[in-house]
Image (cartoon, rainbow, N blue to C red):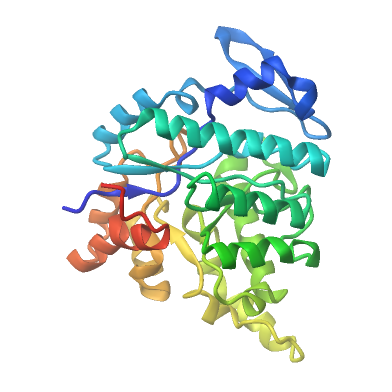
Length: 333
């Protein structure tokens, strides 16, 4: 059994919260203590975040959970509630720099080698996002970047973001797309529909935009990971392909071809769609994910891969080898 590597997990550096408490004005982000000593953050336009769950902050507890889930290593990416796309570009740059630097410091202090860091960037400004990505990859030793599936409602394909995509190619930074601020949230208030249906929907919109608006064609060397097994994109690719055929003047990458351009995590919660994803995208485009520490994630990710019955070679690729190569993690166990 290879040492499984989880590429979809969330972390907030406690030192960033301490710095924010002391210098909130510098970042334009408010902080407030609520019930049971938890804190929540306040951003312009988007309002308060949900209270931060203790497991978002605690690496020791995370190690225990990883052991129970048979995980050998984990990538630590930001919790999307705190990325701050509503801030001004300059405040957003300072906030991203704080999150990235305190993440790098937490990794050094933890010292086990079981974790690697994923950056956040001020995606409200493509040039600032490019600069922060270059700093995170070149100076802090982070291994990739996580971004939202939209920027305050604007699509990821807008030309202003081209400097960011160029930087992602130049730094060889894998880009994890994670949903946040889903359109139509007012219809998703019951039964956890926001997480269960809204999140995969917004991932699908983002993926389709990158393909049909030409980002995938202009930047073919991008490495883009879609969480939650690609949302609905791999399962409605035929419908998107039909639309692409009808747009006869389109020079975008074909949606069916894009199935094997994207990478995907394993969070399907059911073996048949994971087998289908391996069939249409290839097992070599799938990486392990948990969505730790959230309940809607996969508590037994290794078992989920085993249950799909994909064979030993595919399991090894999904559990470890593809992610290690993608994120250049030769020094992670």
